[in-house]
Image (cartoon, rainbow, N blue to C red; front, side, top):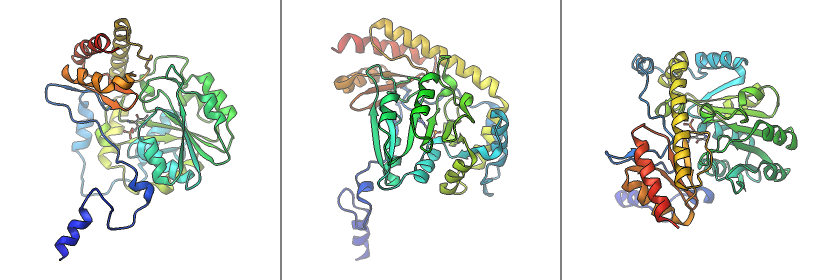
Amino acid sequence: GLGNRLETVTDSPGTPAVRLRPEILATAPYRQGKPAPAEAYKLSSNENPFPPIPAVVEAIAAMSVNRYPDAAATLLSERLAERFGVSRGEVHVGSGSVSILAQFIQAAAGPGDEVLYSWRSFEAYPGLVTVAGATSIRIPNLPDHRHDLAAMAAAVTDRTRVAIVCTPNNPTGSIVTAEEFAAFMAAVPGDLLVLLDEAYVEFVTDPAAVNGRDVLGRYPNLVVLRTFSKAYGLAGLRVGYAIGPERILDAARATAIPLSVTEPAQRAALAALDHEEELLERVAVLAARRDDVFEAVRAQGWPVPRSQANFLWFATGADTEAANDIFLAHGIVGRVLLPEGIRISIGEAESVEKLLAASAEVVEKLP
Ligand code: PMP
């Protein structure tokens, strides 16, 4: 009967009852960090530990959700254009920067095309490339966990359609310097779309680091991606943006799912920009906490790479599961990224003591 047939359709795993793209069947869904037990700290998603400011809560509460949002995110785009000294057409708002990444990859790369990025980097990149039907080309990071931009430039072929540069890099926290970036842009073809993923740029304190703001308008093939999820603490609302040449952004706009940036998200982002100074003070607190934890972990003897983001990278390799058990026992929930290691976000002040107790035990117990 029909009941049986429905059961067959929803049965999983196994062969689905309909024909699906084989590369999609072989792709696992994006895996989020698990929720932390009540007494533990959830440091698995690089979230901002501060609660929302009252202006953000008010902006969300004031919304009439029976109406559709403004599809063009006009007010927010205008506001961002003003902030960066560009025209409104040179700004594109999306439901998180991950959506905008997907839009650009789909706009530029299809079957037979290559998308180039360093590895390890943001765990969403491979899936986005697969969904577009394109091929990922991963360039291993250098032994010090920094991007190997020279190798990346050398790997460009006539099939390469997108190169993603993530700085600070998730999960290692390493930055690309302004000098390295300029050399990279000079080395790659001028018609190759370069995406500068700056999800964590507000946490950067190293003056040598490249900053998209300083290179806007310099390269006709460069798009800078940013987000309200991290420094601005709006991860749950899903709002990010791209800045770049209008004709390139038009291609992302053309692939975008209409109306996916909600009105509460747009209003909250505007409220966050109204109170940017206060939010960036919080960012400075988190960056200082990051540096303190970095120094402490180094002093314990663990070679954590210098991070310019709101997380640290423990390259625990073959001992990752054992190290994670130690972190969990101390109430620290990080993100296990096999086979390389564990990424731990800089969270609440009270989490630091537990994190350092755990890392001390990791250093002591692991070979
Ligand atoms: N880029 C990088 C490097 C990230 O780490 C993240 C979030 N984990 C994103 C983009 C996406 O952030 P969002 O979609 O929340 O803007």
